[in-house]
Image (cartoon, rainbow, N blue to C red; front, top):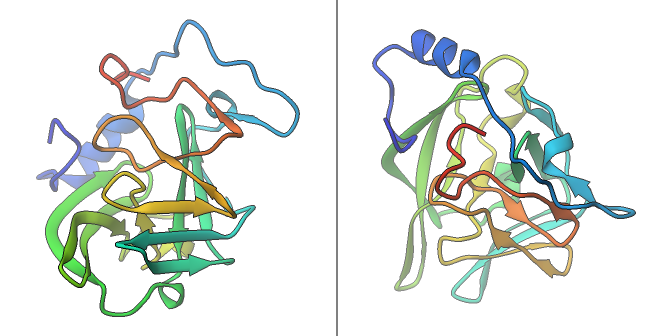
Amino acid sequence: MEDGYGRPPDLTAARAHWRAKKRSQPAEREAIGPGEESVWDYPRPPRLEPAHRPVRALLAGRVVAASTRALRVVETGSPPVYYVPPGDVVPGLFVKSELESFCEWKGLARYFDLRVGDVRAENAAWSYPEPDEGFEPLRDFLAIYPGRALACYLGDERVRAQPGHFYGGWVSDGIKGPFKGEPGTEDW
């Protein structure tokens, strides 16, 4: 499970290991201005909160999810991850894949491929069918990777994908880093 994917053989031991892991911080942080947020001011363990702006995701020019009821998870070192309620996702486009991963705070995640016509984005989204304590409101909400052949928006702003292949944070103009996900940030 070095890359973060897969189900650990013992979920309780994996949770304890990752929660106890010592974390470092970057030597320098981006300065923030009025109305901006630093990912280094976000908490650990993460916090679940309502999204401040509408969210929208498209694939092949088609809206696949749009919500004014999305939730976001903010955690030290990462841009926010946005979760869309099941009722705000176009039915039938997200198909369960075989991939799973584990978060020491939210629990076991299941992944979904996204298909629009002949266009397919593998493992483009994930959800927590049985989230851990404190994250129950995320049950069956979909988090969508902005970097997997998708165009994702907060309001009218197109967001950028968090660095790296594993994390699914949405980088917007008001979010300042540096962000974990690049090589050398594994202990952040």
